[in-house]
Amino acid sequence: RIAYVNGRYLPHSAAGVHIEDRGYQFADGVYEVCEIRHGIIVDLTRHLDRLDRSLAEIRIPSPMSRKALTGIIREVARRNRVRNGLFYLQVTRGEARRDHVFPAPDTAPSLVITAKSTDPKVIAAKNAKGLRAVTVPDNRWDRVDIKTVGLLPNVLARQAAKEAGAQEAIYVDARGMVTEGAATNVWIVDRDGNLVTRPAEHGILRGITRTTLMDVARTLSLPVVEREFSRDEMLAAREVFITAATSICLPVVEIDGQTIGNGHPGTFSEKIRSAFFDVAE
Ligand code: PDD
Image (tube, rainbow, N blue to C red; front, side, top):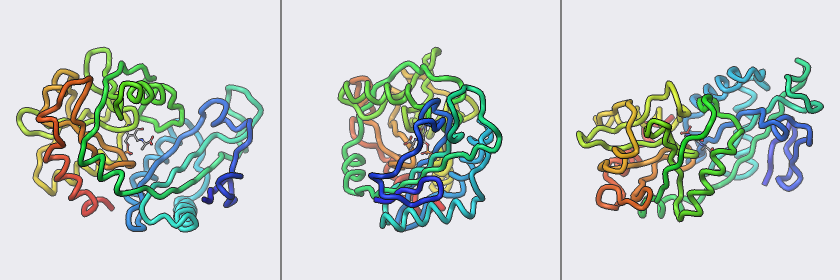
C-alpha cells in the first residue's frame, strides 16, 4: 500500500509524520472519509466542502487548491488499485515545538491521504443480518459539527459497544434525546412512516451520507422529517438505521438488548440503499 504524506508517496509501512506534529500531540486537525465505488469518488464535492468548513472553524489554512487535492486523492486511489473502497484524508496544523497556542503562521499544515479496498461481501452480510447497538451518554464537547481527529469519546464508546457484543454506540444527550452514533448518523422510521433524523444545527456531525440520503428519499417519495427523537421513541420505532460513508446505510435490529421492529432489517433502509448510488454524485 502507498500513502501520501506531505508531498510524497511512500510505502504504507514507512509513512509517518513527526512526533511534534500537532495532530499527534493535540489532535489539532480534521479529517474526511469518503467512499470510492466503481472507481468513482462518491459525493466528493460535499466532502471537500465539509473539509473546508472544518478547517475554517479551527482556523487551519487550506493545504492546497481543491484541484490539486482532488488530483492527489485520485492518484492515491490509483496507486493502491482501489476500485471499491475508502480514502482517508487528514489535515493537521503541522509540525511545531509543543505549545498550545497556534504555531507561526508560516507553519505548513500536514496532509496525509490513504486509500484501501473494502469487501462488498462483508457489507452485504451486515446488511442482511442487521447490527446490534448500545446507547451511551453523549459526553462529547459541543463542537461535534467539526470533523476533528479528536475522537477519544467516540473510541471509548465504540469499544464499550464491542465489549457489549454490539457494533455501534448511539449517543443520548442529557435530555434523553438521541444525537448520533460513535461514527454514524442515526435514523428511525416513526409510527407515521416518516424517516426521522436529528436536525444538524446542534449536537451532531452533518453527515454527507445523511444529506445525500435526503435526496434519495425525495426521489423515492419517502417523507423525511428533521426533528429530535428520544431513546424511548427509537426503541419503539418501526425501523432504525445508521448512515456513514463507510457503510452507506446499515439496519439496526437490536438496541440495549431490545428488539427493534420485528428484529429483521427493515424495508426503508433496504429501499434507500438500493437507490443510493443512482442519486449520489
Ligand atoms: N465517520 N457522525 C460521526 C460522529 C461520524 O464520525 C461520521 C462519519 C458520521 C457520518 O458522516 P458521513 O456520512 O459524512 O460519513 C456521523 C467516519 C466515516 C469515520 O470516522 O470513520
